[in-house]
Amino acid sequence: MKKDLISRRIFFYITQSERNKVKIIIIDMNDNYRNIANIYFPEAKLCVDSFHITKYFNNELNKIRKKIMRRFSSDKSSIEYRLLKYRRHLLFQHQTDVDYVELHYDRILGYHTTDKNVLSKILEIDSELKKAHELKEQYIDFNTVEEDNFVGLEAKSKELDQLIIQ
Image (tube, one colour):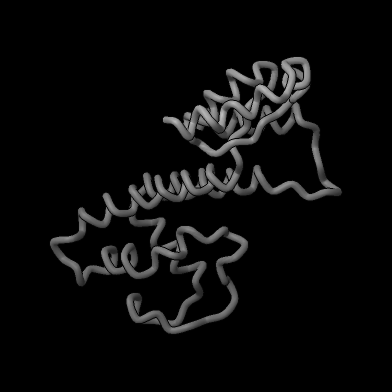
């Protein structure tokens, strides 16, 4: 508590008129930062940094994976259980990083395949898992802006609103 008060004092060295000029503050998902920003920078818009949003998506995706995996835990030798447990890293890779060309022997599936095909098998296990994975991928795609293909802030805002609605 004392540390928090000391850290807040620093804002008094910045005049209110200067603090009102701040347009955007980027924070993680900590409520304390949001509260401080709202108090000391009332004119600023708050944005959560993409790293923490992506981390949030991955944490939620992992919770869903574990919930589904528990449904198959009575038969830990089942393909579904083993894919969810031992190939989970494929769920968290961005789709552009999942190998779709190089064949390798997958011991769980028992044949030669690509990581892209293994991921497809994982996503076929449950529609909730598939939807969560799609939303994570859509957010990452939304957040990837190529410099020469930049669309305006308003268009990105609408795109984000559509993603949230899903």
